[in-house]
Length: 348
Image (tube, rainbow, N blue to C red):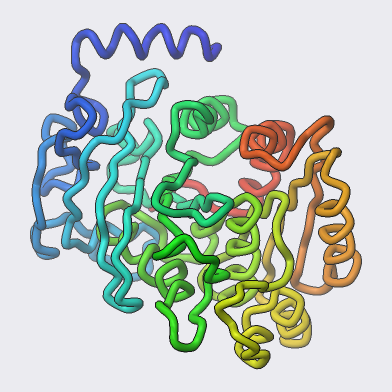
């Protein structure tokens, strides 16, 4: 179905307030993602508050890949309605990370397939989408100007992407760069990103137990975070799309703590993973053709570390600049298809 037709259907569906998607509520209204006891679409969009874990559906067999929501359910409100065929909702909540101790906003979105009956017992892959700059107090990937969610809906319909759940957290507590790391004496932003944020996804969505269902995408400083996190925790995350990324930690908050900086340096982490021999990770780099400096440092990283368990691809975006819009263009031109080929789709 062409995107123009999809968007016409979305407008028509909005007039009759569909129940097959996360909420017939307006922006700011409570919204849920189908984590009710019977997963029936008629309950979508109701505020369930902080449901206890035992009231949520689960798959009993431990060898199944699908993991039902563990709870407690977060209190999401609708941020915006996505211009796709059925009007999916982006939700937002303020989440307290129990392991990091950090509290910050997180935006979430599930694709249309997530709410279709044939997928009701399947777990979905998750992409943690990270912004550039300080990544605070907002994460720009949820915005209507970029329409990332609209694109993923379209790409999934045309088999050029998996139907990913998107989780979009803030990165920093104070607009200072923390390099998505547990910098000594500072808030534990590495733990927030790699432990608390996946926990939020598991509490509220049907996810996958395997690392094949977990990855990152990010631009600039967010690209660094995704790159570092996959190399640092390859048993948890399999893939990343680092777009125009930083390659080395450079936060002034390290204050000369070279040992801690090294432990969070993608170059060192790549060396360690190569020495260990696995598991395999997949890094879909993207750089705009006008980004001379970023192009050089990304190419140098690829030349040095694309070996053994580290698999890389470079999408050079013709005319692309250091912008999120350019990176979405690169994702459409091949990056999403490549990453999707190395991750797992919805599974029982």
